[in-house]
Length: 206
Image (cartoon, rainbow, N blue to C red; front, side, top):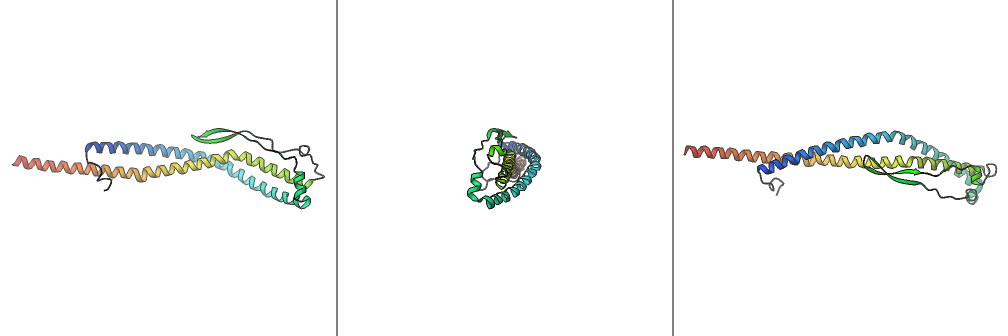
């Protein structure tokens, strides 16, 4: 049984379908506006994010060769010793929101870069290891700086994709179904009125 066959062609159902169509059209417009706002915010964040990603790739291309150079000079054990003291980096995070989308915002961050005194080494005694540590500390600093923006871009991208699917469903499935229903019910009612009109004419003639 088709969708139309399950609907009684009455004026009540015709009015109901028209109200539903109006609601769908308004809903689609709201979703379209929201998607446009999300896309605008996404593009606003994308440009600085691209610059940050380029800098991260550039710094990573410096850090890894520096680490290989330290391993070549000091060996694995020697590099680990020169990396002492080990430390744990803690980042303070609070929940935030961008266009109603939940995100995390970094509100407290550690000082990543260390002085030679803080490392307990001298450049003269461990030049390659110090250079590698400095390069990776710079890389970590860049990653922390980019973390919030990258998460926002990811969440915004997901929201844009979700609103696009919603809009497609409303405009390409639900709205055409309602228009077809309205057309069928209205056509059936018109046909009934014509039949009733013809029947009344015959009765008058009789």
